[in-house]
Image (cartoon, rainbow, N blue to C red; front, side, top):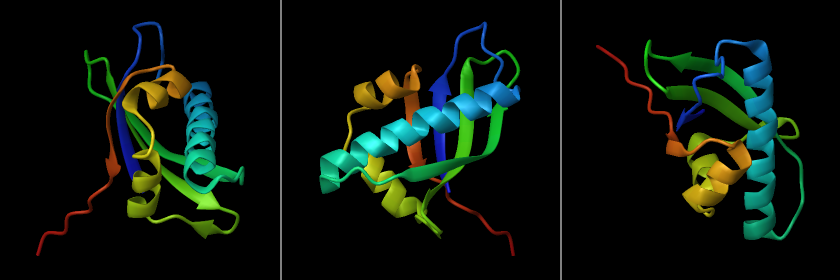
Length: 111
């Protein structure tokens, strides 16, 4: 799983299904661009949005999503490293919003 935090405009509704679908499509374009740059291939990576959240009064939206290559999910490190091959400006260009953080989601366990 990956997490991406980005700024959205005041007219955008991150709680809508349309917003989630739009971000899945845009993230797929970003991964396609990264894959073409790193591997010189145009394979299809699918993105599945797992959650979208926004703190009240904040323009920052957190996206948690997974990336799938056919029937295999990419682990967070692999997917994060793939996106790391692109500049933040280029990622923002494809997402239409400037990203603040693109990273592997760290799971914390309490014992």
